[in-house]
Length: 400
Image (cartoon, rainbow, N blue to C red; front, side):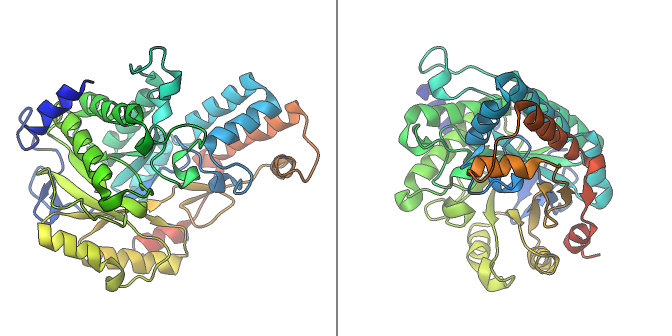
C-alpha cells in the first residue's frame, strides 16, 4: 500500500465506504449496540496461546524469551521437520469448533483472537522483494474457520493484533520480539506492513456481521513521548481500514499495556471504542476512574479487553466492577499448562519436565524421538476433550 492511499483515506475517515448492514455492532454514545439498537455487553475470552505462544503458559519462563526461541529450541531438539509437525498439530488442536460451542454453552458471547502477524505475512527481512508485502494463507484460513464457528454460535469475534511486525514494545514474550531485529517503532517498513495487514484483514471481513471489531495493537509498551507516534500509527491503520470497511468497530488500546491514553483522545473515528486492560490492582472504582473520565468526557464506550491471572474471588469482584458501569470484558485466557487460573487446564505430559530441565542446563537431553513423543502428546493434551474445565473460573466470571 502506498502512502498516498493512506493520505487519501484520512480525508474520508468519517464517511461511509458503503452502507453498513444493520446487523453489525456499532457505538452509540457510551454504549455498544446491535443492529436492533439494543445494548450489547461483551462477555468474552481471549484465545491466548493459540496463534502466539507466550513462554509462561508453557512453563517456560526463564527458559525461552519468546515464541521464536521456543521454536528454535524444539527444532534443535527434534529436527526441523518434526518441529513443523508439532506446530501444525498445535494450531489444529488448541482451538476447535468444540471449544467455541463450549464457550457459548458457558455463557460467553464474544472471543478475542490474539493474532501473530507471521501467520498472515512474513517478516520484512524475509520478503522476496524488499519493501513489498506478500501473504500467507494459513492465518486467514484459521481466522475463517474460527469465524464460522463463532457465527454458528452467534458469538462475536474481535481480531486483536497481539504480535505486530517487529514487536510493539519492550515486553518480549507478549509480542514475540526478536531483539536482534528492528522493532515496530524503529522501522518504517514494519509500520507499513502493520497498516497493510489491517487493510487486508478489513477487506476480507468487511461484510461479516459476527466480526465484532478490530483491536488494532495489543499492549504497546514503549517510550513514545506524548504517544504521538502511537496515535499516528493508529490513525493511519484506521484510515486504511476505512478505505474498504466502514462497518466494524475500531478498538484502541493505550500505551503502557493499555493503560496510558495520553494523546489518544478525542476519538478520530465515529465508530471507536477505548480498550483498557486491568491486572492485579484492587477492584475499586478508583482504579478505573481515569478510563471512566475518558468515556464521560468524550462520549465513547469502554471495553476491558484483557484481565485475569488471579483468583476466583478477584475475578468475581472485577467483573462486578466492570458491569456496574456497563463495561464489557474479555478474560485471559482460555487454556494454560498446569494452571487453574484460566478457563481450562492442560495436563503436563510425562517427560515434559526433562525437556525443560535440559533447556535450563539442569539435565541430560532427551532423545529426538522421546522429545518428539512428549511434544506431540502436548498437542493432544490441549484438545478440549483432554483438558480439565475450571468451572470455578466460569462461575466467578458470570456471578453464578
